[in-house]
Image (cartoon, rainbow, N blue to C red):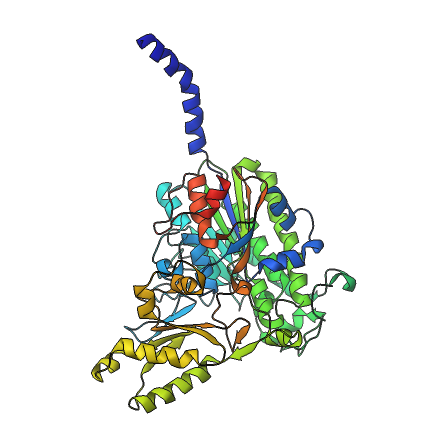
Length: 537
């Protein structure tokens, strides 16, 4: 019997070895590509204009998820990047928006603001990820293997910082004044010599000393509005909202490189820097898995001036397809396919302009938070005494003055109920949800579930508003629960990823835990299960 056991043990050793090797096998590099404010339908709308080696290659040769969602209501830049990195909702990681109100200090908090951190290599850099309440995939990788490298690049500091996490080796963003790449002292006291050399190439001048012309013939732009339409703001410094655009004039008039962000060349400049970082930091060149987060932010800036159905946006996405193709080409040249993983997604979607919806007979409204707040103050002063009952209103969240309400002998819950009923009657408001409701009830799905996924007891307000479908918030949007804001592209390509299209609903927060399990990296500490992993299994 002992001989038989020993015999089967010897036979099984190779299989055990193979299993151990598979468990320990990780890609040499994970590259996350985030295209800001890219709605899923944009992928479909511009599909025929793409080449074969960018978006189409990722979708055709990787896992293509057609029903990826955000599943929370505060669909803003900060929340999107934090959710992707941590594998959890704003209700857990704490980044409930780009801004929120702090009850203790009475100040408005910028999600990445950190006065202890100083700018390095540029002007605006008092930033860090200190407000994140949970770890990121990069943080866990660094704790698991300190020799792994984690970097993040994005024109906007929010994108770079939340893409990086707390323990990363560096996060870099664009300095409007100089056009250089910079960071903060949270990461480095000085810029690396290679970054200084890269900045000295003055590529920003090459991109700004030109005209932005259409890449394709006029006849190709069939999926966009006319070049000059009422839904566009355009470059006000040029008094212009149709092609071509003289970028050198914009540079001279603004005395900065700010407007590079508002062109497709902002994305190309980001790609240039990302490729330089890959080379100079030797990412993926040893047995220690590295992560690089690349945020293409120019789509968000172009949306701000021209909207999601403009020719400018179409031209930008078509050009971005070529930049993504360049990145994939680099990876395939440098690594075998089982040595890298590419994730492509977006941080949030965007709504069509009011003018577009109105012209096409789609029910639409505008909502001005300041007007609603002024009416509420007047109403409360009539019902109660003439006092400042509202401490702040941020991102469609109302913060009541609890001390004042207690001093007046009123119940917080009664105040919340009255304010809630007042706002539900307002044009453009669909829901006004009390914090007490979100604390005492577990909503697992639907609109209230999305609102709850954005609610954090320490940072959110007393009342959370959700607007009606198609309602455009003026002047700046807080996001919404609807498809145009939460349906995003998602593709995985590379090691262990099948070439298959999936139509089941998955969420942005599923990405990091799926990568963790697939490649045996400890999961972010607040992440949960992953529907992506269930589909790939």
